[in-house]
Image (tube, rainbow, N blue to C red; front, side):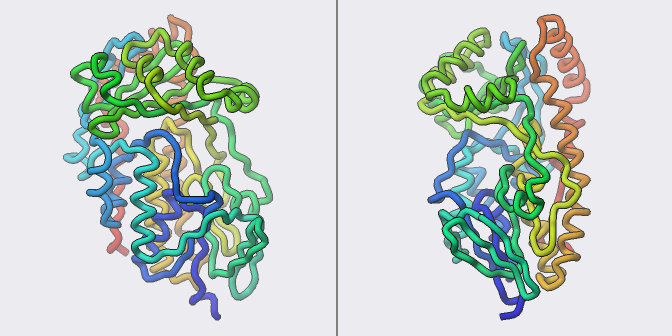
Length: 403
């Protein structure tokens, strides 16, 4: 079997891997997905999909399904931790970008992509943890920890920030970096907190900044809210203490950390059945995203701080652009496709990374005086500039039929 006729091996069945498989199918290129986890269940808190990400899903015919399953966001509310408004900014997303901002649970978005892949006959294999890669003249072999082997034309690592693919091809040279924050999140039924919700909370991302923590919440469906937060913590404390906390102990810690925040923040935490915890990493800027017949996309290549709000949308962009390039050049001319992919994507990703790192400073521990100045400056600039300074993040258009 020659290289051109061998399927592409995709490592990882998350947003990047599943959307890539769907775009490759659209391009007439066969692929098979391999996932380390035992099933398609996706855990995690809520996620914000930016208009640029929704536009990519439209090219797959999935945007309407995602919008209907989530909640569109019309405003961004910025408050201090006592609930005082710093600014309320209308997004005007559909008018400006052609698509809305959408909040949705990670599990729901993942399930939509997974079901579409299954319906299109894309092979998805679970409990296949990548152990090694063996490249040869006629193709490339993925070796898994159960000692099974699969041969393909190329390997695309879409296996997230802790990517096994990246660690193999670059020999662990580029480990993920701790951002200085841990994150938590969860879901709360509207009925449990409705008496604490204000008239401006229902159609907005609600973002509040404290002396030692950040908290955000929004609806992710008509009857359920999602919330997320981040706090500074030394890396060893995050790894050795936080991640070992039982669920009830974590809720108690968060209740203490956010006891001075305005309602409904304490009630959102108190009424969550399951609180998710994570150590927040990003990736150093890699000099290369590919080596030989293997390339990285999404968080495996360029995970940025969650402050960006663009992680999933960047992964969707990657998937569409790489599939377009492989359609243009064919898998036989993969060096050109890989090179163009990095040239197209790296400047945008680096700009997003720099912006996210800058905004992480707003979430660091502050004295009352420095927090006052932070809030005052935020209020002034937001009221003067609105969200226009961030339009470049979302006004990123890719069309499948463009060359």
